[in-house]
Length: 441
Image (cartoon, rainbow, N blue to C red; front, side, top):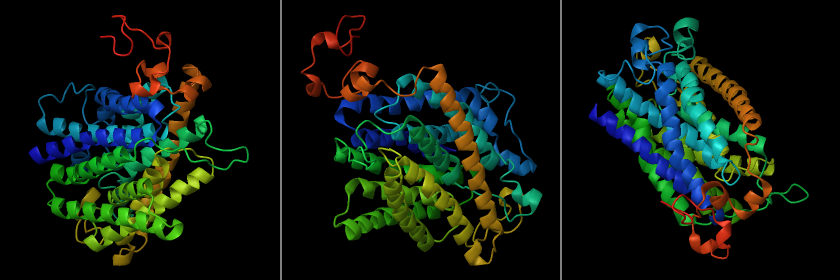
């Protein structure tokens, strides 16, 4: 239990990494707003998950033992019936961390133009409904996990640590939402060609990446500690190698293709390698983990450039790093699972074998079905909620003058870097109850 709690703490720490990563890639005039969203996503999403999401998600370990889908893991929302059950509280903390990461992914993608009220509502919905409902299908012994039992397709869909449940859901939300609000002002010229909008603090981006990489060890090993399956050392090694392979591949690709290794795309490559290994981290050998990370790193670079050229303005590359690479991570399990683990996983006898290890196409087909289900659920349901918020709240996007001047003062009431706005007239800075500009408390 202590190991699971520590893994959960590492996952919760990842919010700091996401905040630094996204803030560094934005312009200084939006720094306070961007970092504030990543601070609030920590609280807002987890309150939604606490109130409704955890009860909807189901208790995967209990469901597997029972051999059927338990849509509600307990009879109470708000943890009403779980306060004396230590296992349930431990599971809640771990799953709450995953919920927070899911909501943090589109938060970075929507930087520099998202209204705080729309963000607040969408984070709440993600934690309370979008993440846990789909998570139940894979982690709560739902219909995707039961493809092996009910349809006799290998072991059913498998996502050990969140390539699909967390990263694909978050990445697809990022893609849908950035498409809906359209690009930032000035991102594209009159011919539709992308212009670079440089982040204001590249070292901050790199620091955020390293914090995320460290937190990822909790992200992938948490399930192993929870179920005590003995795979944590291998999972940690595979996590390390996949992230390293992704960073190296992205750097080398940019170096060979464009003459120099872009620092922020190298960061994207590292994160992409980590995303790619999540689904299969307990089922593949270290050499395969490294290869999965390498492919993920290159795929992330391709995806970032493709999205930008197709008019999808994602300042942090979340659509590619988490969406595209999450798809690859799910497919990788269907290809490289080596049969060393997984007996009775999802209630099916025998170990998990991918296509290259004598498993045929059955496991790969399960993974593809899960990818399709995630795509349909996230795009349709996530897009629906986002469109409703646009009408109910007036607009998901800030006004033009706010976007041009920066979101810090209009949206937050305080600049991220006061020396950058020293030219503003005092009356342009909002006052607070104590009568002081900025932090009037």
